[in-house]
Length: 102
Ligand code: HEC
Image 1 (cartoon, rainbow, N blue to C red):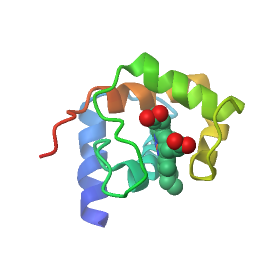
Image 2: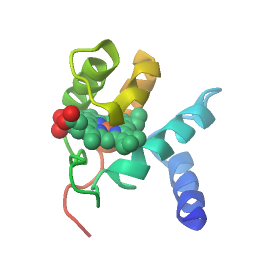
Image 3: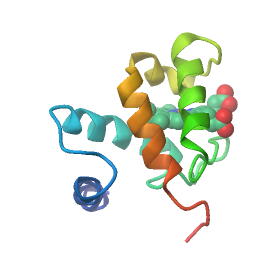
Image 4: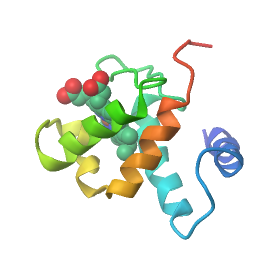
């Protein structure tokens, strides 16, 4: 588990998320998303939707709905603390993952 996260952190630095003051913040949040939605957006838990490879605008819109109360689910409460910029980055990470199960 820890190793998977470290490997992921390395991957993050090389790809989607540009280096910035908030990169660590995003990585922490992303880890939480992954704990339910799977490392690459393909969940292994029943009831958690597959979010890999969906258009970034769609994912971002759903996250805004969870944040602003248009959609509510106790498991998605952490969305309430996301900024627009964080939503954009998280959405683009999952949007660029493959929908195909390895
Ligand atoms: C505790 C588990 C959990 C965590 C953590 C979590 N999610 Fe979710 N997520 C869910 C569940 C369950 C749903 C389905 C909710 C519903 O349909 O009411 C969902 C729904 C979604 C949806 C909408 C998908 C759809 O098909 O409409 C998106 C997008 C999403 N999550 C992204 C994220 C992101 C990004 C994070 C991290 C910031 C995150 N989630 C964190 C469990 C989680």
